[in-house]
Structure formats: C-alpha cells, structure tokens
Image (cartoon, one colour):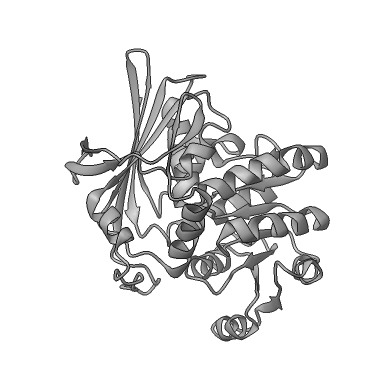
Length: 343
C-alpha cells in the first residue's frame, strides 16, 4: 500500500509512539513527529531521514494548530490522556481532520464521549478513542463474538498476559486514574460505572490452549467498560487479568519492556479470551499475539487507513467496534494477531 497521507503522531518519541511511527511508514503513510520535547523529536527523526518534526504542547493551542496544519489525521500517543486528549481533539476539530488515540484511561475515554459526542456528530468529524490493546481490541472482539445479536446479558474479557513490564507512560496514566478515583476501584455493572473500595476477587479462568486455566484477578477493569457499552447493549462488562501480570504492574521495581527482536518487541505474549452470554447461549472470541504495546500500532494504523479511505460505519465519537466492521478489521490484523471466533 502507498497512501501518501500525512499523519501526525503526537507523542511520537514515546514507547508506543515509536511503534506507531514505524507502522505508518511500513503502511505507506508519511508520519509527522510531534510532541513537546523538541530534542527527543529530533533524535527520533535522525533514524527516519527526511521526517518532518513539529514540536507542540497541549498548553499552547497555536503550536498544535501548526503541528496539524495540512495533514490528513492525528494519532495521539501522549499520555496521560486526562491531560492531552481534549486539547488535541480540539486542535483536530479546528483542523477538520480525524483524531485517533491509544488511551487506556477509563475516565479519560469517558470524558471524550461525554464532552465531544455532540460537537463531533454536528461537524461530521471522526474521533476514535482507545484504539489500542486495551479498549479497542477488546471492543472489536466482543463485537465480532456477538455477531447478529443485538444485545447480550454480559461480556467477559480475560487478559492472559505472560507478564507485564509497564512503560513510564502506563505508570503515569495509572497514577492519574487512581487520583481521579480517590484510590477506589471501578467496575461496570447494571449498565453503569460503579466505584468502590472492596478488594477484587480472585478466581480461575479457563483460557484456551496453549495457556490453559490460570488464576486471574477479577474486576481488573480496563477501558473496555467504556468502549463496549458505548454502542452495545450489554449491562455487565467484566475484565480479568492473570495474577502474574497484575503483580508485575503493581511492583514499582518491575522494569520497562525490553526489545528482544529487530522490530523492538518485548518477549511478552498475550491471549485475550472474550465470552459473551445471552440467556443460555454463549459465544467466544480469542486473540493471541505478542507485546501489548507493539500490537497497538497495527490496530491504530489500520483504523487510520479505514477512516481515510471511507471504510467506516458512522461519524462522531465512536469506539472501534461501532465504527468499523469488527470481523473484517480483525482479519486484516492477521500478520500481528491470531484470531479464533466460536459462534
């Protein structure tokens, strides 16, 4: 493919941003490197000769306008998104271009739907939050698993991670979310978000081969509780996380991910097991792959490609499952994901 479209990556020098820049180039897009640290942008550009560098800060709207001028779309990879999402969306609306981000923060994603749905719909703009491993992939899998169902009683999304070496951005975003919740946990039940102080349950989850049954933390709530209910009638959405990964995330001494191949991916593997239930019926979708940060890049770049080529089902603020044909989208990720649907 050779699209030639120019796409701004805000937060280009971050861990996920670098994967996104590389994936854009691989897909024939022309990335523009943006973010607040000009030195880091120049250092990244040195490995991509000829790449345009446009420093910008969310505190300076004019700088964002300069960064987005004349481009086809913007991908926001700069967290915490509680700080960056709204200013970059505002700049995208002023520029008249689509906005996509990789936010995993529950509250930041909820804010995007709350504050921009009406304006984006009125403008015919496209805004896709949480187009990442957390929020985007789970939503696509739930949507694909439901198939012709128009509603379900519950959706369960279990994350089987071999481990989790969080980036600095993940830790910073988590700290912001904890402050916003006053240290409470969150779950989605009865069709709404609930905040509470009780300890999360621990249980066994029957992951399919090759992982098999594992102990998981129940109600390990991720951005899927925003994306899935935004367009599907599912009053109960629950997340689960393998205890090893949860332990890594909570340990302040766990190091950042380390590259183990030529693409910069870590050795981390994942299995996402989705179960949706309606009455006495059950449907399932399973995705397997490597490196949750690296796989976000093909997710978000496929989204950008489909938006810019008109392969979307709606406008306004929309999650991945609402705006894209979920089975077709997941099928396009076959070089990066192994997918199994069990209707």
